[in-house]
Amino acid sequence: MSDDNGKPHGETMKVLLAFLGKRQQEMTHLLGEFVRCESPSADREAVNRFGQIVASQWRKRGARVRVVRQARRGSHVRAEIVARGIRPSGQILILGHLDTVHPAGTLAKFPYRLSGGRAWGPGTFDMKAGLVLALFAADALQAAGLRPHRRLVFLWTSDEEIGSAASRRLIEQEARRSECVLVLEPPLGRDGRLKTERHGVGDAELIVTGRAAHAGVDPQRGVNAVHELALQIARLLAWDNPRRGIRVQATVVSGGTASNVIPASARAEIDIRYARVGDAPKILRMLRGLRPILPGARIQVRGAISRPPMVRTAASSKLFQQAQSLMREIGLPLGEASTGGGSDGSFAAALGVPTLDGLGAVGDGAHTLREHVVIRTLAQRAALLAGLLASL
Ligand SMILES: [Zn+2]
Image (cartoon, rainbow, N blue to C red; front, side, top):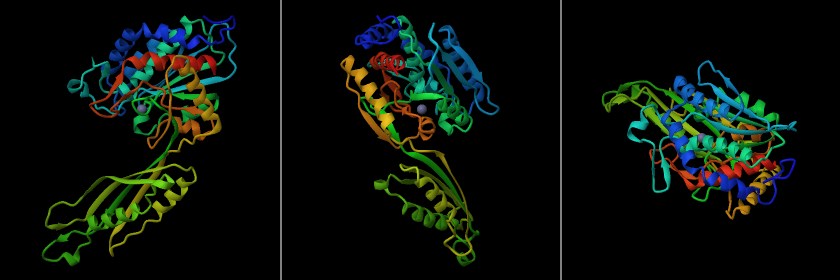
């Protein structure tokens, strides 16, 4: 199946796909086990329980597993594989997350099930199927006698869906040691395009304080916090500039107490996306520069950039081309896309490490009760990952 030193050759992808195609049932079975262990980001114990299941799967495959405990979040799981008889030259980081956005109990109304060629359930697409693929890719490499000449580090973090505060340093540390980073987040669209470009993500909170008064008797004595907030949001919307890749959205607003009272407080959350690295400090400066508009109003602004943008580079586009040519060997097209959504891949890309994202299973409905993956793509994407690990 491979030559003496384990290097892949022209038939490699076909061999990998043939092996994985026969394991479709095992893959959906394991995916079911993963999905049934709910792992909402904020529930440390739940994420730890799921992490243990994932860790034991890697131990079964002979990986060196380290569970990286966290004080407030679930533990991260790091699994390392070095092929037998290989002295690795460098490292490939494969990145994913254990947590999902779905609160505990979602499974009761949205149980794991297979129907219409799809596997449905909370966290299937984002991204427990990605975790399954990685395990079967490792199996396929071994079955095909392929011995990657790099150290493979699989890092499954616990808090991606809530901004990665507890994992960012570890991700960056491993990324710096790596020749490239492969991210098993969901791909884009029905055709499963890989992501080579992502917007940066920022968020801001506006807290407005006014003064309460009777809305009919003496409104002049009040300062309307909701009006102030509305004016501030209108001002923020002037920054929205799709052509430059800047998107500003007010996403959560609240304020007021009763319909005949001038509201004394109001609050808004603002989601900010940006495409250019240099726009981050500008956006933060503009946020800090916000001043009250109505006399007597006060505003407090909290703003932060949570993820840098992932910028397409010559090296990342070369990675993509490699993936595309591997898929061509098994007669499958592979496209490339840009997205406004952020991921942990952005941390790696910002360090200048070539990063390829969206390598998970094809599906749809991330973060909703329509979440699913297309079952036949599990084997295809696992073959792609295995092919990349063997040839990079
Ligand atoms: Zn995700």
